[in-house]
Length: 160
Image 1 (cartoon, rainbow, N blue to C red):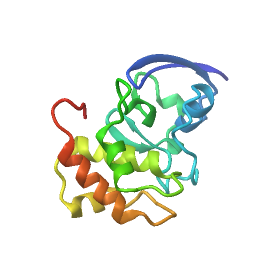
Image 2 (image 1 turned 135 degrees about the vertical axis):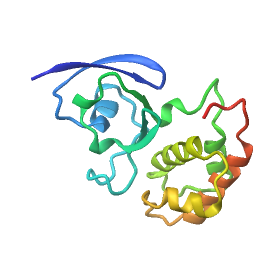
Image 3 (image 1 turned 90 degrees about the horizontal axis):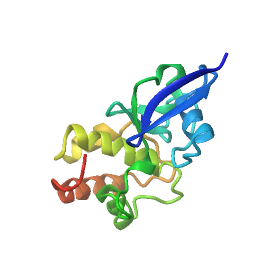
Image 4 (image 1 turned 30 degrees about the horizontal axis):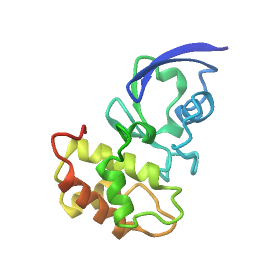
């Protein structure tokens, strides 16, 4: 049975008619055509589908659409602003912290959630915070370096 859900996506109010048993990932990609969030494993293990839900990094493949009403969802599409990449995105490029790029949006969104909680993490805190996101290409050291760089470059002008 279809139901209407209302939530914010990247700061904009949206209403979507869904079946209810669909995932947030399906809502984002299929109903709202926001394809930056990737389908990886479908069981919450890889992190490719990571988004922020009410400021918490979550696996969008594990969240049901029926639980979205009234929430605030933030995806990779909302990260850049005013035509300029976010410092995290710039750092990932500068450190070549991506190879195939498939995990990148999930990595960046998980890192964004980490930096919201801890704007100046140590290398160990970054490693621990990113541990559950998988990179099949093995760019982990460059990813950690990129997050360290971004944490130093983010200032009060950049919204975390």
